[in-house]
Length: 378
Image (cartoon, rainbow, N blue to C red; front, side, top):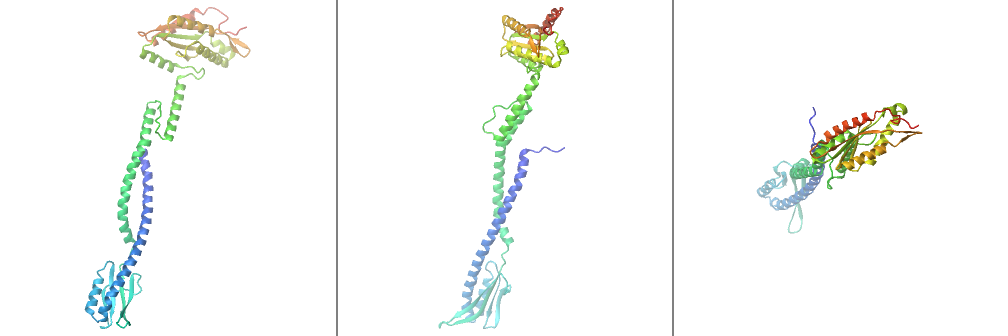
């Protein structure tokens, strides 16, 4: 089983290579600039060292003071980056050397002619001073420049990651956690916080809209648009919690089956839709009208007294006995209605069951031979 991957983990995995690439590019650029600057500084310093010691060596060499000249050359090898020094001792007809013998054609060897100018202004050539310097390697420059860079990079990386995690948690992590909790509880997340990112707000609005649509589909009859049993149970549960009082009305259509048999199911569907529309006209906005299935409907009317309930039944009787036009033939139906009251001490669900029994008694009483029930008007 693949372990779950956190969003911030994937974020960091994608961020780290980019940061590393940025560091490599910055390090390469900095190293190149450091190396060029180091070479320029080294050239200046080496030229200055060469000129200074050439000036110091002229007098001892002219005076044939080999001991002093040798000491100066020995001291020159102690200078930074100096590998070897050589100068001719014309008096002793030999080469004074210290350290590595400088290569005449070496790129890290600097040389300068030695001249002594006497009191008459005459210049006397004394040979050539050569100094072999330590090669300036780019690897040396890298090692010297990358250490402070690495320290700066690690400090910046820690600061960037800490800031990224804090920002990620605030702008993405916390909103996603709230949205996930709402989804798990099948609850709408409303209102949406104003400081959320537009993308997360859009996802949340889409979720809220889909949740409302799914709830509507789950609680409503697709044919008539009325509520279904699920909505009725929710309404009865709410009445039970609030301790309301009122009436429950249950009705079905007498001899509805012959409508389907005679005119077809399309006519039956139109009858059910018309009944639903007429019921909604008869009730108040606070009442709940549901289709229980087939030709059976229920109405929950909280806060109604007996006269109001009787008036409601009369309105429904009058509305549903009006002919329903179907093409060129009107269809007449009659309802059987059961009515039961509930109060704070009664259960609305029990009242619904009693209304069901009352409806079937009314239906039984209406089953006398009549041609008007569910038959077309001649």
